[in-house]
Length: 386
Image (cartoon, rainbow, N blue to C red; front, side, top):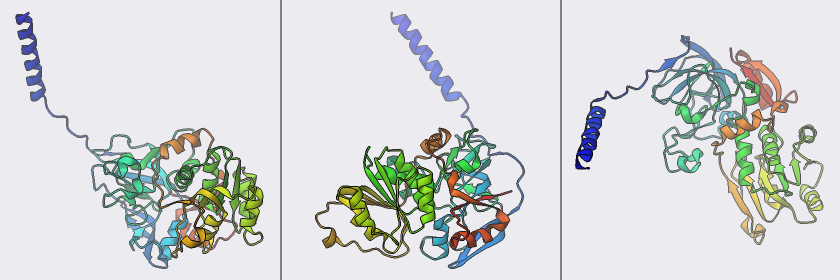
């Protein structure tokens, strides 16, 4: 017995010695797909009120966790207009815009493990380290890294360009399945994530009545994500009859109400036996839409403020005293992109009805004019980058 034990100890010591002497594996060198050009076209936020299309250097890797993405399809978001209008104080002049786009992995840093050159990916609106207190709890919008939260197209260069550098690539990219087109995946990282996050906050239960204020791009995504929870009735509220009809035609809403033509609060009470909506999602961000949100909610309802306001809002606590409302607000925690991509692949989320216009990157300034001024029945652009 003692001899056997001595033999085992000797073998163990030999194994430990061999492990100690084994060479430490070296990190792989950065991987690239093809030679990159030196310059590219990019839409740049110059200063308040000014966006220009200009030539910019193609980005390079700065950190081992970075990836360079060759953008294939991008779009314009309402948040880009907020930046232009000076309503996003953290936005840095001189930054390339764009936080909602898809593309192909062109180059990866040596610490990127989940992706390789050639992978088709959707890019997350948020940059997050995955290691801080907030990231570990899924609150990625509040990542404490210096580039955490909404950075792309706001504080660091974004995706309205030929190429983009994505920090923390293993966290910020979502692989696109072969069955999913670029257009189908385009909104994964931003407005679909926003709608998905908002619907999850609202605590929607089967047979509930859900009211969504705003039937713009984010509102439409919120409507389709609310539908995933099996509510009894979804009410869309917007000043555009055309968008209300689209929401109903696509099965995203059961009822459409236009506050320019109807008393929304009164109509919702009629539809809910006098109670009000069980859950309200405020996605419009208009001058009076926050007040509408809490007024149309039933007592003890959840009111989710998804919208980004350009002006401060008033919380009239004496007026709402006794309604015992729960308010949930803030920027999207876009931490569910893989789940969203699975729903897209399964046909449960289909945003094809949002894409009303298409353009090339070289014509993005004309697209900005159409989108900002809501011309030609525009909802969303798909902007091809070649």
